Length: 289
Image 1 (cartoon, rainbow, N blue to C red):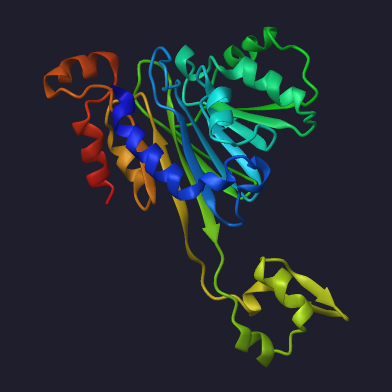
Image 2: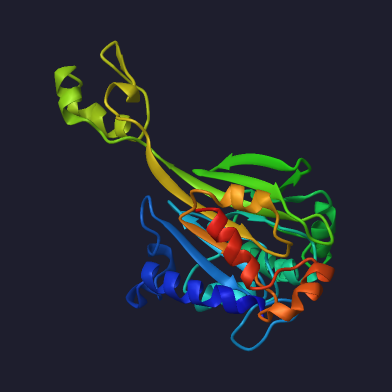
């Protein structure tokens, strides 16, 4: 039942972000400075027809990130018209099989795309368990970089993403993730003109780069206003409701959270197996407002 809470978000978000006319051109879909989010899978324990196991994929400025990789993930990626090669990082919430079982096949497919760039894997202590799945695909044409998260909270920055891993409460070590995209201030044309900054410097300054031209150095703060609100997505699955989830979800444009049991009378079962009823993530979302 966990998928029911998520599936509406998937359908709405995907239809808004990825027009059907572009679905056959995966390499051209991503838009500059736009964060695309897709729940590739929302099922638990076993895949079902039309519902893959847990996986979420984001794309930003040509770089893709995956959170969890349940069975059927690469099929779901192809169904959505997205592509494997730009995946630069895979974050794991925890190492139960339904969150990692799609990894060997995905790695083999990525290897067959002639990928050479490193792939970063991020997850709780015990990443060697995931690496042991590579017995199926021991030879890959690209290196894998492992980043184990051991603290209650850790921030990792890469490819324009600020990734915050925060510990949640499952029956094994488990983390939720917040993904943030910062947004620079507006470019002030009048300030640039007043300081006689050459027009050829405007574009790199707008991107936040420092420019030296004809012996003069121009910095972004000379022409940019205060930072604007960026984008934030918080993803949390397989946990009991704890205050830190709401704390990390504050300010999120999108909060994706598990809901395993739809019936309120199954509260005791949710507590036993360290999951949530549908009512509990709704309260977390309200608390995060």
